[in-house]
Image 1 (cartoon, rainbow, N blue to C red):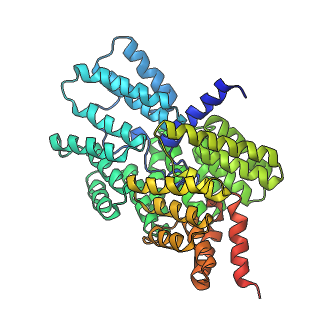
Image 2 (image 1 turned 180 degrees about the horizontal axis):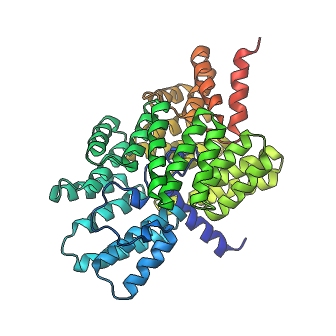
Image 3 (image 1 turned 45 degrees about the vertical axis):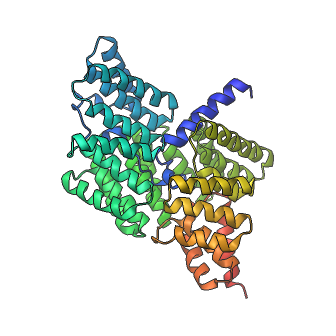
Length: 448
C-alpha cells in the first residue's frame, strides 16, 4: 500500500477511536460496545434553537449538506451552530476527524456574531468530549453552568465526564436529576450504561430497550442506529444471539452499512458458526471505519481461519494506528488490550495503561492494566488491578474473562469458575481469539 492511502486510513482510524460510539461494541473497548457519547440530536435538550423543518430526519451526511447550503447562502450565526451540530453527528457516524475540525471552525464563526456565547461554549464541550478530553469537557461545561445553571446539555456533559473519569456515584446522582428534568432516550441510555457498570444487565437492557423503542418512534436514523447498537451489545453480553441480531438489523435498516452495527453482527455470525459471513462483515466495516478493534477482530478471524499472513497484516495495521494515535494525542485503551491479547510489546502496554489511569480512572482503565500485567506474568499486580476493575460488579464479559484468567492462574478456582462462566455466556463480547480460550479455561476447571 502506498504511503498516502495508508496515512489516510490511519488518520480516519485515529479520529474514529476518538469519536466512535460504541466503538460499538467492539468490545474490547467498552466504549465501543457501550458508547457514552450519543448522537448529537440525542443530547438532552441541546441548547440553542431547534432545527427547523424535518431535515433532522435525514442521515448525518445529508444534514451536513443541508446546513452547508444554508451557510453558503449567507446564513446567520444560528445556521453556523446547526452546521456544527451536523458535523458532530457525522463525525460520530463516520469517524472523520476533519468533521470535528469543521465543527470547531463553524463554532468559531458563530462566536463572532452570537449574542449569547453559551450555545457555542456548550458545543465546544461536546467536541472536547468527542476527543476523549474529559477533563477539558468537564471544565468547559462547568463554565457554561456558571452562567446558565439550567443548561441541560452542559449538565449532561458534566455527568458523562464524571462517569468517564471514574466518579460513578456522582455521575449517578447527576443522571437521576437529568432523567427527572428531561426523560428521554438520551437519559435512559445513560442510566442503562450506569446499570451495566453496576452489574445489573437486566435493568440496563430494559432502559436501553426503552430508549431504542422511543428512537424508532422519533425516526432520526442516527439515533435509531445508535440506540439499537447499544441494545445489541447488551444482548451479546447476555448471550442472546437472536435478540442481538435483531437489534443490529434495525440499526442497519436505519443506517445501511453502519460500521458499529456490522461489527456487532459479525460477532453474532462468528458465534453462530458462520465465520465467512463474519469476515465479510468485518472487512466491509473496517474499510469504512478502520477502528483498531475492528481491524484486530478481523485479524483474529483470519487467524482462526488459518490465514496467518492476512492476520499479521491486520495486526501490523493496528500497531500503525496506535503509533499515529499517540502522535495525535488521541489514545485509546484498546491498544493496551490488543497488545495484551496478542502478547506484543507488553512493557509499552503496561506503561500506557498506567498513563491512562492518571487521566481516566474508571473500571476499564483498571481492567486494561490488569490484563497487560497478566500477559507479562506479573500476577500479584494484575490481581490488584483486577480487583479494582471488578469492584462495581460490571456486567462486561471481557472484564470477567480477564479477572477469571488471573484468578485461575493464582489457584482461586471457585472465583475463577464464576467469572469464567460469565465470560463464556457472553463470549460474543470477547475478541474472537479469546472466546475459545475462555471456554478452554473454564473446561480445565471441570477436567478430572
